[in-house]
Image (cartoon, rainbow, N blue to C red):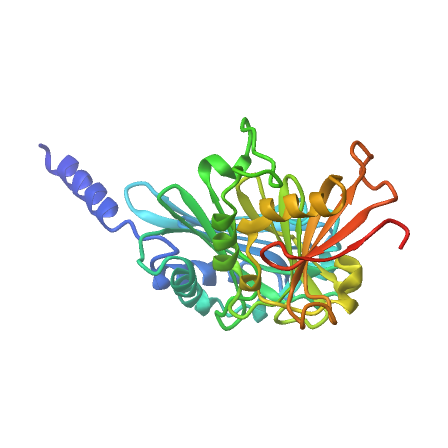
Length: 357
């Protein structure tokens, strides 16, 4: 082999052997981030930061209006190097919201926290260290009606292990801030599958759904409402960092996903002022089919539309109960005249409220 060709081969092999990336090399990331930040206009207002193994991207308010993106890519030819790109005009990252409300100063980002955020996510969702970190996204969690800059900054770390995608949301100090996501590859879209009715026996394994919720909720999370219909389960959870704000986490067709926007209690759950908080472990989703049977029997075999798990002050010694909403067979959704059956965990009848009472 000619000396020059041999040298080129050695360079390529060495480059592959040392193929570090932005998510596993703090030094490599720090140098690339410094280069990207140095290319930004003064007083840039950022909307979103994304860090992937070979890419760091930032979307910000453009001086002339709209949004623009800058990015640094890790490219490997004979040697690995960082390539700066941008600015490029792009659409705002959250359509339908005010870019100003989502903005934050680049100087507010403690990017030296990146390794800590990744490690916190591993401790939360991957204690064995088997998952591959796919990305870290930093953005402001929006709240309906919030003033610009009011929502908390969140770090969302995405990992993948054994075909499963895991996401966890972290606050500025690395503690779980909100709700995470989890979905297996086949379940993530739900396309092409006929998912069973959640209100029928022998359908979805609801004990596994509850375990998934428990893993994704922040420690000590307080639930305001569990709503179950034929296709989905929605938890309304008190935001640990924002009193009076509700965050929602939904399971639908095999996928857990948090709502993109926080909501004040009065919008997310108009009855919130009359409800008390409880822990998800206080109720068992696995007993839903049994509750459906008990509610139908108590209401004269009417059609179950949805269930709520709630703590209603003055009912059952300040412990949560199940509230089942029923209607006449074939009545259109939203029609007046719903029955309400209240059941204790396990299915014991607590009361029946007929329409108009």
